[in-house]
Length: 487
Image 1 (tube, rainbow, N blue to C red):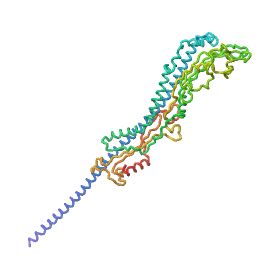
Image 2: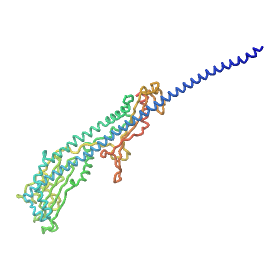
Image 3: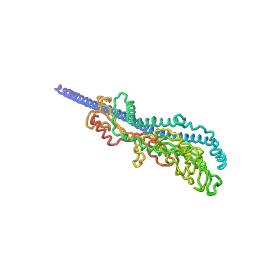
Image 4: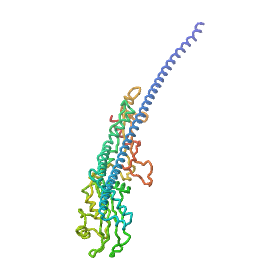
């Protein structure tokens, strides 16, 4: 039948169309699956990018906060160093005031001796040269200068008291305040810097540090330990010529006694500024003409004629046993020979002595006393002077946390809770992101010393600087433990 012959190809074509429709449906399903997978990958990539961005932001903010904390530490230690140096400087100023006071008293006494011609200026000039005679005569201009040293109204006394007040009531208290509040100031600075990066408080800085070497790093030295400061003050004083010993001896050109022709009359100028015990400044200035004499009872001896004297010190109770003197020297020796009085009341050596004991006696009996509080307590690092400990650094480590709910991810949850889930190298044991940073304050001169010696860390040199530091494994482990505990 010819219809059967033509119907066969028609049925074959319809079967092929059906099969094509089936395959087209399968491709669409596969495409939808692939599209869903690509969409999921894009979402995952977006979430990962957001997490990485938040991680970098959190770490950068924490690094900035940690560096700021170390910088606060450096400024605090440098402040202590500057104030320590100021303490020394004020002590040197007080030494100058005491020395000026003894000079004023000395000039006043010398003006009185000049007026009494005891001894006469012409004799001094004739025996020791015109310059010494003229110097003696110039003391007339110092008459009344001793009033500047009177306590408490004299100008020099007021200057001394003001320096003492600044040392104990300003600098020492400022040091104690900085030392006491350094930890709180450091944390406040870190919080402020961290909050500037996260103004919406979507991240939190741990108030409990992972590590901190600040406790015990700075100590205060008081009481007998102030002796450490005394050496520094004395070293500083040695650099000032005005505070140097004022000792000179001038001998007459010709001998005067046949019993001892190898000896001559002497003009002795003596003066010294000293730091006694723990902060008592004392200055003594004297000048005496020692006339060479002899008799049949004791042979040759020196008869002292005080020409000028003055003394000032910071404690009226401080003994002066190191100076040869007596408490109440006679005004003159009209009733008793000088050498007899010396033998009866003193143990002075009248021939081989080198001091002005009678002038010292007058200086001590007329000395001015300015009450002061002595050397102050001061701050210093506990590791000062111990180079075997290696580099000294004030170090801490801090952690910050950003809850998952504050992260801009598609699910609004961030990294889900899980044991050790890893996102771009950062573990999230809890439903939050954390970062750890460490910083330190270290001691280093900006330039090497001129003598090429090593500068040891101390709070007398303001060379403290700040830098970030590597986080130690124990600190990371501690941060991980806090994260896992939900803290």
